[in-house]
Image (cartoon, rainbow, N blue to C red; front, side, top):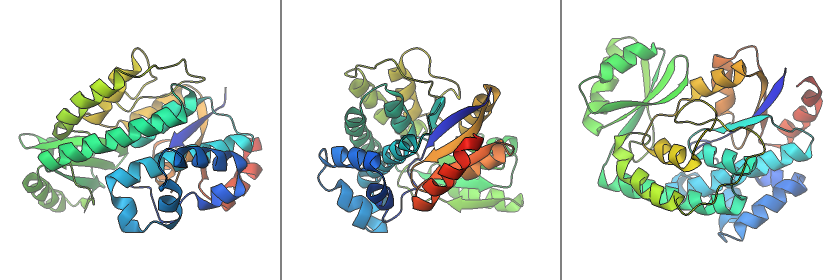
Length: 304
């Protein structure tokens, strides 16, 4: 049976002015953004008028992207699209859980702010770097990481794997990839996220999650940590997400295996849509990021 999944964007998808068109167009999106702005009074100014530099700071990026993720999903639902499942990339997983009903948008916003602070503190104590490796087989990249302080952390799609590591070993990997005729891009981040560099952040996140009162979800959410549906204690999966790889390719393949054939990216940018097109090329892919996206959605939703 055909199904629809909402996919929530993560850090890196942000851009100046994000969410403004949704705010002006959709009462549902406006309601979410106003509610979260009441939690942090500069949120709307940051999203609509913040500079690229301001939006690149983790303490700003994470709450801003989370808010726009949920605003996009609210606008999509208002337009008549209802998901059968959801997933989010890294930070986006917290938005997916909020939208599914594990906790309120406001509770999730507070958790996102705390998560951002913990990650930033861990990155300051344990400096790391991240490198996107393109046009190489996953197994080949994994082999290059062996015996060094290098950790494959974002399994994005076929031919794209992100590696976290020490600055010196990331330099080694850049050269090794070049020699192997691959391509690499050094990511503009301050830490080695989703790796053992974040162990302290994960431990402290566990303490925050122990205070949470998780509710029954309205539909399944897929875990970055396992690549499968959430089962068991959500706190354990969220804690492990901090210092373990994002298995995005596994998530999309698992969803497709469960009958999901329409993927809707809710949030800024279209990065996740690009990943899905490489993983499930026959799937229908939509995006909700601007007025034109929403208008296309209205035309396309009957096909989903």
